[in-house]
View 1: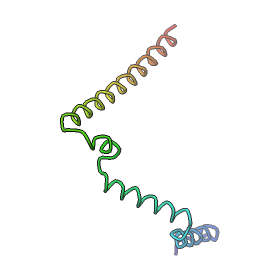
View 2: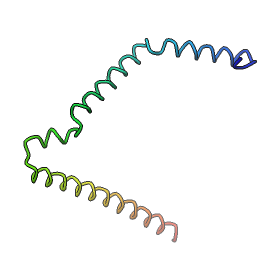
View 3: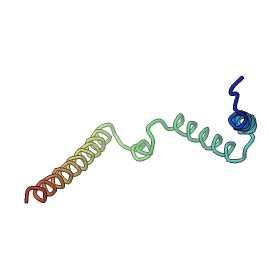
View 4: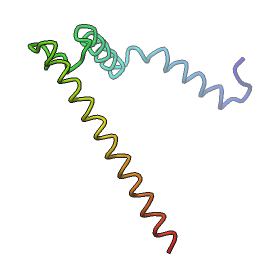
Length: 97
């Protein structure tokens, strides 16, 4: 037996009933269909959005494009770190006065 208390047993039984009906629920079916569509699109196009942009490119152009993306990511990461360091400096200046 799950539990001796009547209230908890009722909650547990209602949870079991919910589990039985969950797969027929409209939102669950819609979410499952969308998940399957996402997995199919990932399987058909494993490179994601980048591969659509790189379809007509040569290998050299693809390499240049990837390097540009990598540099942009590094630049954004460095800017975020600089902002964080600047915020820490401002806090320490305010705390030191």
